[in-house]
Image 1 (cartoon, rainbow, N blue to C red):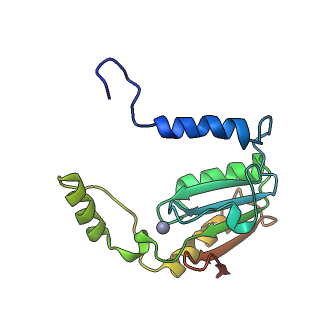
Image 2 (cartoon, rainbow, N blue to C red):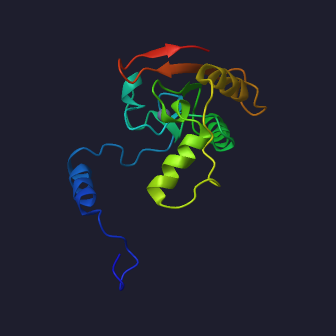
Length: 172
Ligand SMILES: [Zn+2]
């Protein structure tokens, strides 16, 4: 960042691509924020996951909430309650995935790897690793289903996404 500016540098390629996108591909101008397919998806931040396309949806169709591991956190529940009551969500998919870093490292391993990258102590940083993905998925789906503000009329499913085949397997 230069001394005279508070605007970070290094984004020029992305900004240029955005201008092309706005001119050629952008189609949701004037859309409301409703999930037009009535779908919300909670999934991992993993770059191998294309949450809309993997279930045949497109921009405008769904609310997407992502975090490391695809966990139903308090923030995810907050998003789902808003989605159900204000944004047209009728079906909720919770979608962790195979070969997830959050499920293949221990908390200690992640702290050590981050600490090595950062060149400083990272032992204070929490990472909410997942010990048993299937058990975590069952608990996460139960947390959504039992939320007092998410009615039984909303379908809540738990799925494992295989990053090598592109297939979803429903587990809950
Ligand atoms: Zn992941």
